[in-house]
Image (cartoon, rainbow, N blue to C red):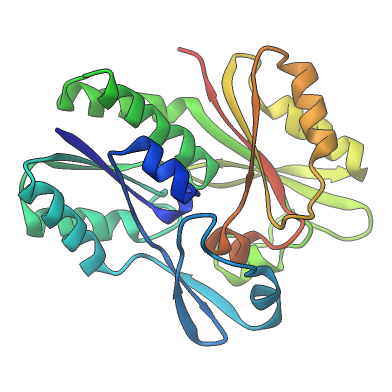
Length: 270
């Protein structure tokens, strides 16, 4: 049997984890005012935004022992393990998982997703589908490695403070002054696309970044109240045959991009 391990940036709910059946989620860590928390399933983190905005925050990769315990438990059951984690350019999670796999032994393959959040959601869903379809371990790993290049994220933020504080962005040309807001792509690391003037130009730039052959699309937002209705309607118009999924980001990603941020994750056809 093949088991899939991922990290909590995937954003699955408790029900989604249960529905997939073969997925184990290792929690990322975050700190609010010096107090440590483990990121849980998306429906189990509570109302974290007021706390995130009210005190100094930082995030950390999963504890090494969490990966070791998870891998040990699965290999003891006779499972082969595919572990899909967030981009190594943004976190030490990949290195931690690789080290844990070496310590445990067994047939464990750790994949650097080169994405995060909703992009991870898309990749892990594909892994689940491959396993349920009976695809052999080595072939499944090959297909997932190839699929990574077909997954992308475009996003925007209301403030650069969070990205800069978290060390994920140098100020460069990005700006949020006056009526300008930056648009970024995530391809392994955060890439600045341009500064958009006004809300319509910002949405137009984001829509233009989503390929016409996208076969799955997820709209994600930081904070329940962030309005993504216009973006969603524009995506429905540009991709009329694709169902537009909706996700709210968890605490770890929210700490890094701040309230009001929103984006689109997609995977293209073969």
